[in-house]
Amino acid sequence: MKYYLPLIALLLFVTACTTQPKPQAESLSGEFLFYDNAAVLNTGSEIYGVVVDDKLHELHAQALTVQKDSFDMVQVYIKGVISENPNEEGWPQVVNVKEIDSVAPSAPLTNQMIEIRTE
Image (cartoon, rainbow, N blue to C red; front, side, top):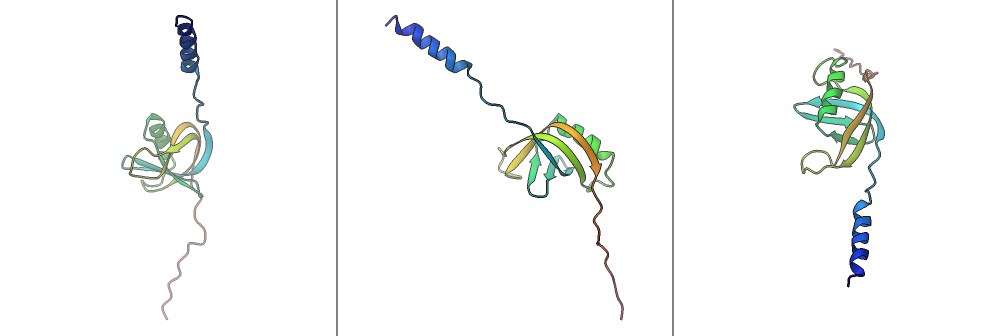
């Protein structure tokens, strides 16, 4: 029995020291909007909720400089970690912003002219 005790201790030590792989930050770009303590990122192919933290508030502060009004979406280029949403409300996946690359105004929509005719 006394020979098994050091072996068990060694096995416990080795298994406790193994590290879990860290999720990789992905480069994302899309239209960003923060309103009423909720944020969303529309990449064109996916829509993500954004985790509200200090980095989000920093991104929002940069977005305010190019927003025309509070409902104007701005183009952002960020690095973030995509994960499943732990809450029942909101989008199925959320992005945790790790790094902000740049913020720019969204491209204006073209061919949005409405012609009114009176005949």
